[in-house]
Amino acid sequence: MAIKRLDGRKQHELRKMFAKVGVIPNADGSAVFAFGETIAIAAVYGPRLLHPQHMQNPATGILRVNYDLFSFSVSDRKKPGSSRRSQEISKMTEHALAPVLDLKEFPNTVLDVQIYILQADAGTRTAGINAASLALAHAGIPMKDLVCSVAIGKQDKDIVVDLTKAEEDFEGGEGPTDFPLAKVANSDEYTLLQLDGKISTSLVKEVLTIAEKSCREIYEVQKKALKEVVN
Amino acid sequence: MVKISERNTNTDNSEDALVSKKRKIVIPGEVIASGEDFLPSDGAKRLGNDIVATKFGLAEEAGRVIKVISITGAFIPRRNNVIIGRVINITMNGWVIDIDSAQSGFLPIDASPRFINKNEMDQFLCIGDVVVAKIWSINQRGIDLSLDGNGLGKLEQGFIFRVSPNRVPRVIGREGSMISLIKEKTNCDITVGQNGWVWICGSTMEDEIKARKAVEMVTEKAYVEGLTEKMEAWFQDN
Image 1 (tube, each protein chain N blue to C red):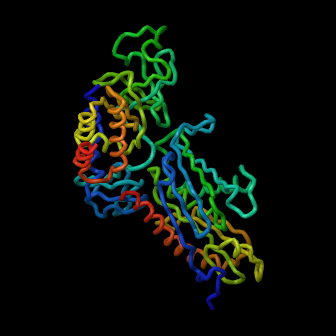
Image 2 (image 1 turned 120 degrees about the vertical axis):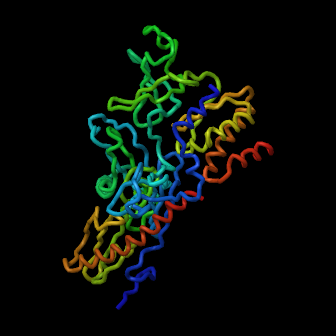
Image 3 (image 1 turned 30 degrees about the horizontal axis):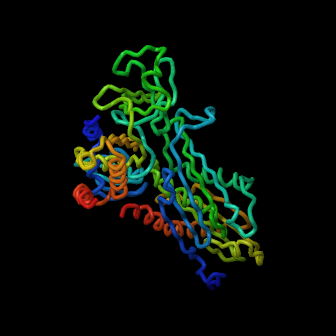
């Protein structure tokens, strides 16, 4: 019953992944992560002093994420600068990454994470989370685990993994469904669950099982990228 | 000024950690060792029966103790670190010094080696001056610095540049072997701060440039084994 996907992938197959750390020399930690045509680049600065001062927390450092698309990353030029969408994704990425971080050692400071999308072909937020997770590890920040993120979607009734833009826009059958999620690599905790579209409750369990399998593949790519630093 | 590298080595002996094959790279959440025999130290924690890394770096086993040494990332100030910083403000009772970390350092007026008139503090250290100082204490109020020690004080002449703070132990070498080699071969005065700032002062520009090249080469090849010998060969060729 296996359906045929536009790019010839199997139903539960991820796009070809690429990951590399240490790509921005002036940042304290940096990484790129790509899902096929979607490329995200992330830089970590800090821990550094937080301004405005009223945001400082004397008990712990805080995480501040900024996500944005480069104007050339999409086919219709995106107006540069933050938008409602990018602010929302920044916040959501912050929530997806914060649970693995331990910033108690750095009170009153901020950890700035900049995520930029170089090329967008759906799944930019998940690629961004994967890149940011790598960049945070690369910056030597105390964290309990890496975060892996993937989007699961639906083509009519079939569950497919890691949709491209063309698949995401597919209107046929039950309509498009996009289900991005992020998982703590070596545990069962999920730090992000979003749902855009419709899915029956009975299918969610199946989605999570598939997501877990996909996250393991992503984790291996991330692990390899980090271990390659020393050569 | 000359003895400072030897002082630096006392505070951080992780240099050989960068080369030995026994140590391995770990990522956050990775199990380093299993069993009740081990004790977690910096960058590691116990999770049930396992010792798990809490940060990215090189895992090192010293007897029963396991710790993770960072190989990337920003400078985290530690007590007794010798650092190079720049004066950014003069207050009633001391100087505020940018030490390239989240918090700036504070050098109290009593920490200076001689008496200083409070009205003429800029005679001793002016805004923009560069100093070598030691981190005396780190508390909730901030980082206190001190000039009490060999080779500490204001830097005149020469120039400063930055290298990755994580590569500083390698630049200094075991018991200062690397830095003394570079000093000897280039006839330059060199001070390496734990925050990654390097100060070089030589009699000619050529010497200074050569010394900088050598320091930068060491930071680039931090993971090469027997680097001191390789550097000696490099000095012979150049």
